[in-house]
Image (cartoon, rainbow, N blue to C red):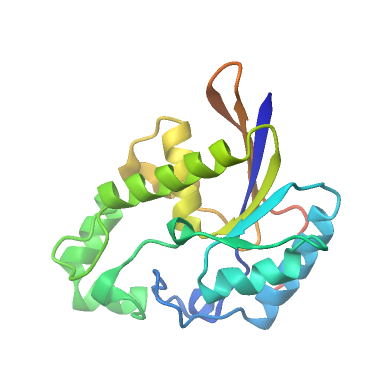
Length: 207
């Protein structure tokens, strides 16, 4: 028996466009381009038949979810699907960070850690939350096809764990807004397999 999970990164948000740190704050919203991305994504997903749908409760994810949602399907929200909490850095522009907090900026570039950042979620905490959430969704939907709308950080952690990649190197799994990543779980082999990562072939609109 195989369980298939479609991991979707939400459409472009205003914070994405401005280069701001979004984290699990809930101020960011989809841009017009993000809406178009989600509409194109819906056309892509309409070719599939899903048994369940989950979404991060954050606004940018929910806006995408309501656009791509299969007709008649309920959206189940899960706090575990949120983006990483960047603490006091949320809302800041990354370019400013390089000048104002070079210690944090440089360390994050090397290890993805946020030393000395008040309220920030550590990589260890992030990994535990993400993997617990992902495994629970798979467990609850054995043998089914599931649609999950979430964030780039969540997808990167899942990909790193499945491919046995050190968490500090998860940037290699950065995904684009409106992208599709497909992961299968085999009950027979008790193993996860990446069928597709960061598929954006359905996105044909220029920014």
